[in-house]
Every structure is written in C-alpha cells, then in structure tokens.
Length: 255
Image (tube, rainbow, N blue to C red):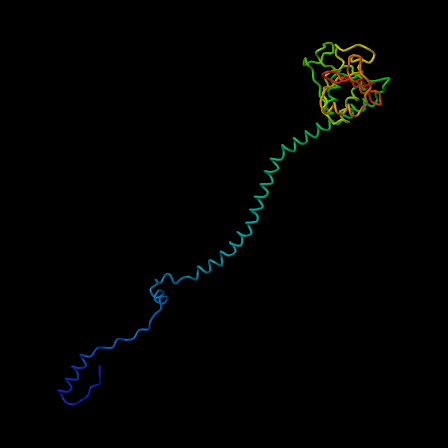
C-alpha cells in the first residue's frame, strides 16, 4: 500500500480507493531446475543413499572372489575333459597293445621259420608239414588254392604241401620277392602228378597259377631252356631251377 498524504478528508478517501483498486505485485520466485524440483518432491525416505554406497564397498571383495573362482571352475572343466578323454582312449590303447603282442608273435614265428629254412641244405633238405608251409606262405604274401577245397595228400583234387622240401618252399618265396607279383600255389605233393626222383611227390616240385605279372617275370628274367616232351616251354635259372609253362600253371622244379 502507498504512503498516506494528508490533504483533506475527501482527498484521503480518494487515495484509499485508488490504492485499493491497484493490482498487487506478486513476490518473485526463483526458477527451479527439473532436478531441483524432483529433489524437492522426493519423499524423505529416499534421501538415505549412503548405506547403498557402503554396500557396494562390501560387495567389491565378493566380486573379486568370483573372478578368482572363475579360473578354478575352468580348470575343473578342463580336468573333467581330460578324464573323459583318458576313459575313451583306454580301449584303443588296449587294442593297440593286443595288436602289438600279436605282431610280436608273428615276428617270432617268421624268425623261427626263416631259421628252419636257413638250416636246410640241398642234400639234406628239411621236410615241412602242410600247416607250416601254409603259414610261411601267408607270412610272405603268397596264397594257395585247391579245386576240391581240401588238403588231403592222397586226393588228386586237393592241394597239399605235406612233406614238401624246405628248399622248394624257399624257392617259391624267393620268386615272389624278386618278381613282386601275386603268387598263388595250385599244386604240391598231392597225388596225381608224374612220378620220379624229382617229382611233386618227392617234394621237389610246386605249381603256381599263370598271371601276366608272373609270366612276364619268368620269360624276361630266365633264359629259354628248350621244350619239354609234352610241348611245355622251359626256362632255367643259374641255380638249377626249371620253369615249365603248362596250359594253366607253371610247373617249377627246385633242386
């Protein structure tokens, strides 16, 4: 309200009326930021934030502990994987051990066979059994076949190596080694062959199947030695072996 000015009753009344009709000034409020208004309107309970900060400080060692624990957990997973790998590998290791033992046994048999054959002399040749001869041939990569699927020495449709001379057996093995061909034995000491001092029955002869590889090796390696009485072409080696080319096999004499 303005200041009173004396000047009579009428003037004083007019002054009061004028002052009453003048707009009153509102007090100025400082403009507040949204953050300030939010803080002003925030309930009193939310002002207590200090314990949460302290909780973060307490949680920090636990967080570090979890980071230390993580490598241990990874180590346990790696160890579990190694244990599983060893469990899976065990049967394979056992199989390799068994195979190595069988291979060692085959090596011993091969050495025994080689020693037996090395002791055999042309004048005093060792007579071998059918089982020994078949096993020795198999070790060297040779095979044998019988039209009758038998090994009876007294049956002409069988293929028997019973009582064969060790020199004859060693000769056909040397032929396989020198030629590198597949050699299949089709005749031995069984009945049905021509008799004689150097015959099949006496253990001096052995029959093998014709093949392109075997034929090429014999005809190119050994010189011709004439023709046999039955028309079979003969090829001879320097050590006395004689190869006769019959219709379906080679008839070979090893002295």
